[in-house]
Amino acid sequence: MSGADRIKQLAAIMDLPGFPKSAGMRVVSVEPGKVTMALAKREDLCQFFGHFHGGVITALADHAAGACATSSMPDGKIAVTVEIKINFLSPADGEEIIARAETIQAGSSIGVVKVEVVSLKAGAERACAFATATMRAMDMPAGFR
Amino acid sequence: MSGADRIKQLAAIMDLPGFPKSAGMRVVSVEPGKVTMALAKREDLCQFFGHFHGGVITALADHAAGACATSSMPDGKIAVTVEIKINFLSPADGEEIIARAETIQAGSSIGVVKVEVVSLKAGAERACAFATATMRAMDMPAGFR
Amino acid sequence: MSGADRIKQLAAIMDLPGFPKSAGMRVVSVEPGKVTMALAKREDLCQFFGHFHGGVITALADHAAGACATSSMPDGKIAVTVEIKINFLSPADGEEIIARAETIQAGSSIGVVKVEVVSLKAGAERACAFATATMRAMDMPAGFR
Amino acid sequence: MSGADRIKQLAAIMDLPGFPKSAGMRVVSVEPGKVTMALAKREDLCQFFGHFHGGVITALADHAAGACATSSMPDGKIAVTVEIKINFLSPADGEEIIARAETIQAGSSIGVVKVEVVSLKAGAERACAFATATMRAMDMPAGFR
Image (tube, rainbow over all chains, first blue to last red; front, side, top):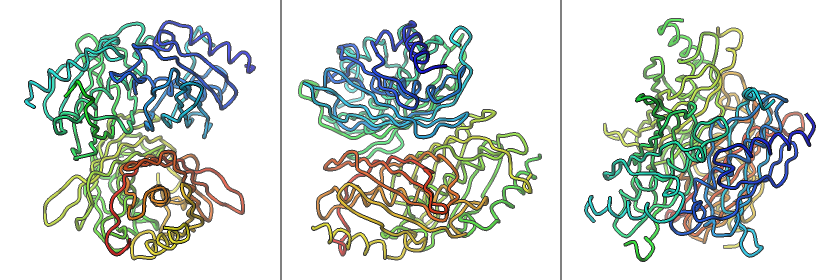
């Protein structure tokens, strides 16, 4: 599958009903082993201090990691999360968060991805979280191949 | 603060606008060092296979861990997440997920909590995730003390 | 392979030259899905405060996790560590540390294990670390099957 | 304390009896927020396949992370590990391993560090592990200030 086809596939999956779509996650860029996704602030995505909720930050990081690992796998495979670990570095008090995922191990069955998440506030970025995730390849469900 | 007052405080916080409320997280039980929370399935909380999204599972685990660590801290303090690590053990394909958090270290400034998450399907529970989280104490924001 | 044969195999592997043997790790008990190992204090296993070194504690936890995951796998397979995460809960200032590993997911290719490590001091145990590890199955090298 | 003094202090601590010294860990370079350490292969540091033992790799990563976090803290403070998480990416089958730690959050009480570990074989480096660690500041024990 070409890079353009991969992006189409990824966009098609993200347009399906579910949390990524309802939260408003969007793909910023995709290349093999590198994926960037973003999410704009909305009250229902925050914790009670008014910053992005840690679980929502993790969801974006996880989604970027999954797309990133999938981009390094053979056609017909999709990455599912075995585990993810995330450190919260500073309050995510911006109007948008951006997750930049990068593959650090592309194996045939296991992939490892690191993700840097920044909070964008008045045009300035600040690191707000750092995650690593272990992914495994499974067969893409019929209808998405 | 008495146990009953803690539960009231926790319920008040969860009733504020934000992701926990909009997702529909609810407190099942609270005692010092042990907190259980639950979340019913909704299409906008799932991934594209129709199971609970990993980020949503993590959000519930994180929230239960935070409440659990807070329950072990002095009055006027609230736990915020330093880091969380979660393993996904099986598809969360039930109609509800339940997160059971238990403090394994209650320090003055740092707390460590483990969380077991089960998926409830047709009355049967199955382990679907296991998390550990490191929390630190910060001052409860004014208005919540 | 019977339980007794598994213990023999595990003991044979631990008696091979390497860190586990030179450090003095020993098997306390093995049953499918549950393994306990112990390690006595020695100056060359400590950090400069005189407590067990965190890396050494992790090595014992990792070894117990590996044996535990292997005990849940088919004959001819051995578990290798994909990742391990450990929280240090209190100084390991006892004369011995004991790692109790328990399988929380026994898959065909991936296993997840949790490990509680206690420090034993003057007959009293105190929790000093808590780990989770993700393992994958690989073929046992020839000569160990 | 000047950079040169920090290196002296670090070298003095690593020269004390304990696992780092007995294993043969050595400081390659230190600057604020960046520390590199190395460890040469020895049979008693390996697992039974003859590669570096995962626990030993973790110990080196942890030590580099601790020195790195300490380098970002005020004088008189030393970093101790709250938790460390490490992914093993490929067999550490070289004649030496090198751990490169870099601070990603330098807080007053909490620090977060990432560590890349490479295996050096016949002059070529290969990534063999990736870790993140959370550290907290404690007072340097008397005699080391």
